[in-house]
Length: 629
Image (cartoon, rainbow, N blue to C red):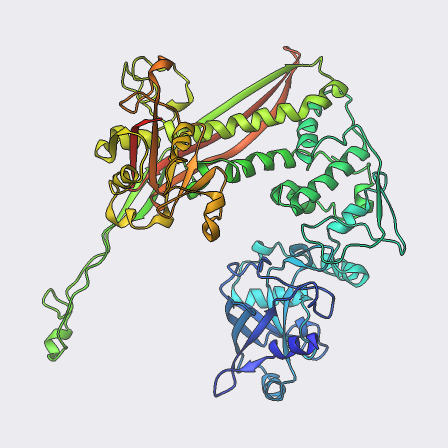
């Protein structure tokens, strides 16, 4: 019954009078209990790479039909998703000699849509869920509701005819096509489950009937019954994929260090598990997948050149960047852009064109484009803002006396310290950055001279923006936090921004947060109900605006500035921002490298990032200072 519904909803339909415009659902969303004929299914989260090309070819039976072969019978020009699946529309080639016959089959309802992709582009979970399926072509087939692997030769000729760049999908040559086709016939595309099977020395499963080894998923709809899982402990058992990756980075420079194939199998297994559970991004295993480590026999082959070296560092480096984007409090609040150059001039919108009330055109003279035309000429203003990335860096060192066995128990601490320190530094600079180096002028040391190299000297941050650069955007609270005061600060921003609470955010220090708990208007997360879609560091809502508490936001003196005398810093503060009007630019994402310096007989870990913060105008944030807390 389920398959009948799928076939009906994926039927090819004529959507024009002449029959040359066709459409229908190329993909229908499924579930574990609603699979296609190959036991797999798509979800709305499946990466279909819809933005890859403006058009795609239409084939009959994925270019594998003996009569039509690789003949392109049309082009797809519309692909859009909805609650049912992926809707497509296309145009049949009027000059193709087979089109008339195909139109007759369409009219009889005998053809259905089937999406096509290439083996090296797709990714599936072991339970059949398709996570990545870049749509390379669409086919009409008498056996629909099945995604299929496309003919490489058909793709080559069609994409060449359409003028599409094949480099975006790294298409294989003919020999590789034949090889991939054989692999598909044997077992389709090897997925993460095949990798997990290689970890035979680490896990034994006893089941009746025998259970298939697989990576765990957050919601396994059909867990094996009466299943016992036995795991053999290793000296790396207490280390995560990130920790093992970091250990490898450190020890790889030690002459003669060879962790063995067991280490790499365990690292690969943990990395894939971490990606599947969302603890790591795809970058953690991208190198492993791209280099072909997708089968158990490949992971068991220690004779391969550079075995394990290529992917071992990916997990902990990926973890660095993922944590900054997801676990920081301040950085994830704002959009970010990768800077192709430094400096980089970012184009911005400026004044909108003017709309006029105009009379009906009644005179031929009004058709001449002059200044006296019926519709006056207006312009859409444009502007640009320059982004200059600055570098933050940390260096950690330890002696070579910490050999492999002694460093294993503390490696997790080393990695956590490095990651946490860079996370904190990024948020600190975004909040407290001030490039002023003179005496008694920096908002972070108002009664002294900043030490050269202090991180807040990198660039101007949010507090400097409101307290100094645009001082009209600051309010002296001189009282305990209250809704009236917070609203006063909110409406210091431009009215168009202050009236969009969902695009605003409050950032407060810990002491101000504690004082806000006494405000009846402040909704903590457990009271927020359906609005409680929390981000890291979010502590609640006020007037529908998300409130964040950051440990990097300092207490200040009564003027909102930080004194060199800690006893003077007893006042709380809060800053409200209109998020879309700030942009973080990254010229270099968070990167880390470990090197061994033989002359010092020591290891050096260096973590760096190059970034900046820009504001689009002077009314996109406001500061409340001198809170009694």
